[in-house]
Image (cartoon, rainbow, N blue to C red; front, side, top):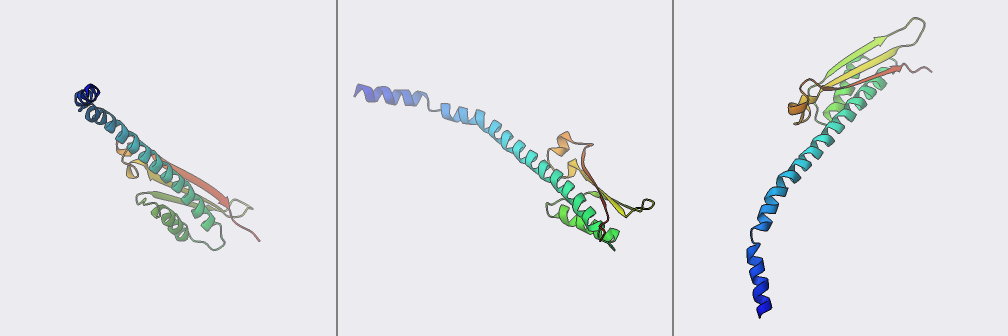
Length: 137
């Protein structure tokens, strides 16, 4: 009986401890989750930027490909991850005595892709450049 009274008294003294601990830990947990989400999103956008430049250049080295087909391919890859604000620069040149070279540059502003970009990436962007030579038979 005395043992039960001691257990009951001990519990009643610690009633608010769990609430206080939860209130202290929850903001840190949410901050970590938000940071993980932002880092993952930024990594995905960086990879998509590189992949879109490569896919655009691949589309451009096929004989008869147009600049619009290259742009469409880049837009297709970037739109698949939800990126809408980006710039594309396509250069198709024929060096003397050589085959066609296609250079695709894709630039995605950091502020348009992540929420953290508004805080930390005011003048930053993801840029990918891919240059490939035309396929020959």
